[in-house]
Image (cartoon, rainbow, N blue to C red; front, side, top):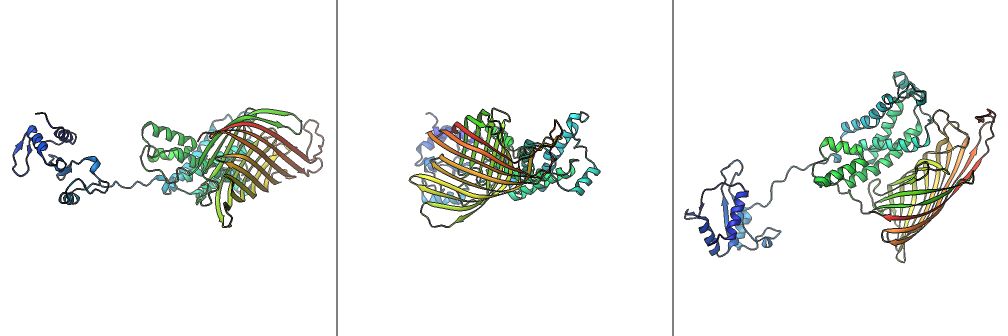
Length: 556
């Protein structure tokens, strides 16, 4: 007679459980049983589901007590553990005797859920102070006259001078001040953010790190424009990269998938990657934060051409333009609770010089719902942190701004109409000066504080904007030396997009940049560099019309 398949299953279980036994015994009689006798008894049993197996281990330290198992059909074991296939008497017995839950391991507390001041300070000093200063000080040939000022050669005298003299505006070029400094501020910011600090506390890390650099790590007088750009724009840039890093990193993944998610997260946020490496979280499996993935996320790419008309020379420049846009969260969700619960980020790369032609980012700081009784409409007051960078042949402008705006959403026959109107406070802004040039560091633009206004109206069909009209104007009072100018800047664009697929649209954009600069230079202050004669400095009105044709596709 062949061995019953259920008997074979029991033997396999015993082997995998590493249980050593010599003979099987029948309960009650104590009679030794062979495998054939076990098989016969199982076959003749009234209900094989009631068979009970007791395993006695010869390793008492490993198995402190005998283990009782009930071999039940899987489809008859209910989730509430009532053993429905057993009699009431048997079910009561097993409910009292069998524990179906294992002891829970100690709950792991993720590194970023608590504050770690020590590692935060180390990250701040190491990533954005020690490494850059060391590379600058020892990675260049400072005996070469082309290297310019020997700013890394610091000492007690330079530090005391900086503390005594206070702030000024520096002469760095536009890209350094309005792109490089915000990126550096992102590293300062994430020194706090990746160590458990919230948005506001991490912003203090960005401001503090910038102050340390400006005061102690350069022989140059501290620059107020660097401090604001690094602190404010660094916070905006940093929170965006922190959220994107968290989104692509999967704490529950294993194997090669985990490796790639960690690499992707490290590209977005090197400071966070370093912390995960030293704390062991880079390989530890634990739950992801609840906010890791936003309710809405849109990543789109577009490619097309743009024509810029230089107003001063009447020359037209045709260039290829590639854009990436990220929309994180629902910007019309009026119930968000944390800064940058939703944000917008855009970057554009041109085939002409300069390649990085624009970058904009804004994120919500506060939202106050307005209870206006209007069917199918929502309204809210919102405060946002804005970062703008424009650098092309027709228009140069960068800023850090706080915007207070009224935003509304209306339902119109299956379409969504979105509107925004707001005012802007600009702690630092920079735009072209038609006469001034810093021959040492290359600054050819003015910097100062300003006020502005913005408005937008857009019609949405599904996930696409089929019509979009946007306008912004800013007024900058020059504070950098020489401070004999004021600038009125305007920009606007009208876009039409035709959806060809759910994920693909064709678009046309018509826009312009305009700058009106008012100059009040003293007579003879600006001289012709070739003749040395005094140069007239009349006001300048400059505008750049733009025509753009593109295709856009949604990736995520």
